[in-house]
Length: 364
Length: 261
Image (cartoon, rainbow over all chains, first blue to last red; front, side, top):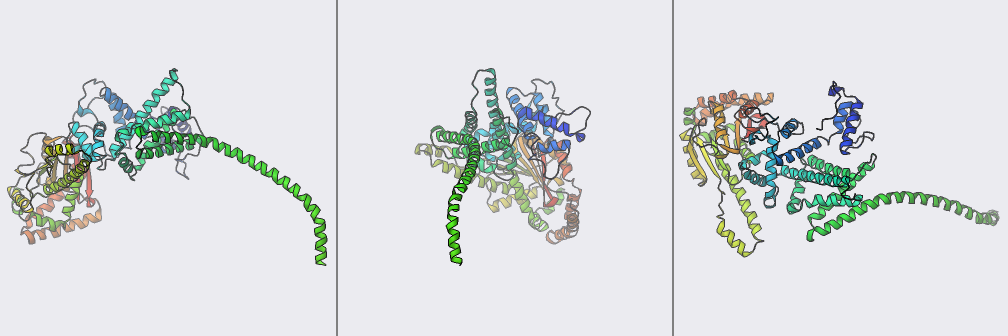
């Protein structure tokens, strides 16, 4: 579903720049989530310009997470409805994806056929990753009690009928649980924004102005934290551990990307970066404010958010204003300088005569 | 195999310490940390005659349980008197929290030494000692949360049978952990290790335990044991998933772990 466009009969190693451009533009059109290749590619290795296909691979450092996330959406949706064999087969594709650090094993026993076996799935046939996701989802309800720890995961495994030792599959500091939760929230947010967009397209709702849209999106996302708010500072600190930073940063940037995409951002210049940086700043600061907010229903936090978004909007205007003010100022100064010189020069002319006479008298 | 361990039982611990220069304690501690058991876990320790793993397990679970109870008490400080009195009636504040270890060994002498050690060190609750063969465990299916075998699996004649038995007695979601001497890939260390094994260890065996032959057998059995990847494949064949291994000391010892999912 997210395989990059490959013209038939061409090996990946021979990809030309044209293919790369096609692939990039197709991805950009799909999600608006990548800067166009025209800008100095920030993710390319400095000093080296790998050719064609390798360049595409290099530039999509963040995209492997998206296919994985997209497949996660598919998996979750299908998990809820019924255990879809189709999801498992696409799951199997991504099982061999290099982003997964641990070696994936096939389930023991006769090879399950993933095409066509309607409602006959039993637990043996789901892949390990699916089972891991189920355990983590079940563990989330124990988080308010045990925190984001291996204990919560163990309790979650118990509810699924597995032994508590199954928590040994995960890292002992609970980071997988947090990452799972964050990606789940991001997925929910995307679905929410997509639904809203559909309503607007169908004409059933009004298109919101940008600042209102951003405010609502960030508020919706932060509200998902409310059930876990007491243990969330612990989660934030775990997400900042060095071995977690790549994944947590990935999730954060893709969420911000999503929000801007649904906000209708079509920018193709440096604005792309500033917008994302600004929104990331707003989101992070609002999250921190929320941690220590004790007002009813977090009113203070939403007011803070409102002010920050307004600031950001004004900042854009101010930047323009400053520029034009600067120009006006410079012109004014120039004019003033010319006038002053002209005015000053008159007295100087009038002074110069007696001054030179005086000078002569002294020097005599 | 039986006779080797009969003669070795009494001096087992001393020999372990002298052969490995005491590092075996660290290895077993690392195994315990990897297991990270929570209170309420049922452990089966196979070929764990003198009880090293079992005692470490009990210590670990006790400390985790203490921490849990402390957390509960802290939480209690916010409750009303009514709720606190109710909780006192419910909770028995068990120090082990229902965790149990079953130590199983093929050799009666090893079990005897283990029981004596337990009494001597003061471990009374949560321990059971069972005589049994790893290839044919006297337990029902789906009983245990964790199955460990520390330095025992190379003495089993048919490793695949032992692995199948392990799979059988584990609950779904249960974990298989195996701590064993393994293959050193680093050539320099491998040479040193060989020299140490073949020259020093049998001599130590003769001096301390008065038994050259058993320790020569020991060293040879280490060499004959399949290396990490092969053992991993065998564990997968028995039906375990997410099989992984961790080398300690560059491969002198390896911990293999698998899950019954």
